Image 1 (cartoon, rainbow over the protein chains, first blue to last red):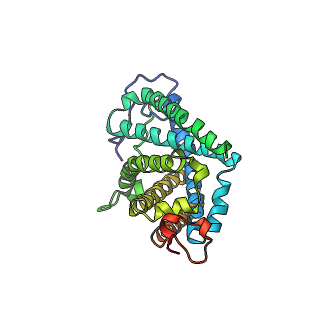
Image 2: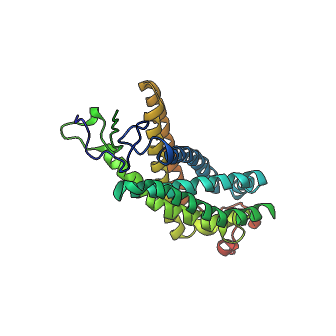
Image 3: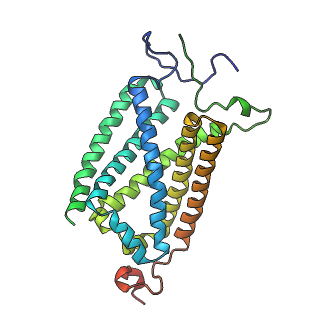
Length: 138
Length: 151
């Protein structure tokens, strides 16, 4: 193995003596975006498993599907859907940020993290009020 | 102390074989390509199911059969199914590699992930392509009148 493998991500910024060089993924924006990406990814994966099973009920009977999908329309699950969409939107925008870090320029990873957070807020402002009205007015 | 981390697309030392395919690299690339496609597919899915009309409270068998009777949404949903499950399964594999400490637990978790992904891809694909919007014996009130008026 070479001592420093080619293709390793290196941060362009100066690193302080308390942080190891050679990684964007330890400390501050680089680390917290990574932590959130993992947590949201796992949450979405387990929802996906359940969601495929509930959708498969269309093949059982309309009654079975309607009975289960009605559970998604309760106030509690309505709030759960806000959390789910929040996780998906973060994972999506931060995933695009990771692609830009890898294929474009790692130098802008911090500012791109705040762009991700900003786009997340805008998207959730568009989604949450409308969704909550749909959930709580029925 | 300068610490260097290998890029996540580097092959494992043991898999750097003479003629070996660098699967880790292709997996790394798959996450990015499928990720871009999934942003489009899932945002579209969420918009149509949760934002248009009355959103989640309008979902029922009639709504879903209206979509799944349309080849456009069949392809959309099956593409989402395959891309998302493989993306999610590969992501979970990364976590198992990071956090499962022994070869035995890694093997158990990865086998479980693979089994879940394969079973759900097969199940979901069969459901989409064998779906009947007007199943016999169903109450007419539950069905989509656009397809089932002839009953």
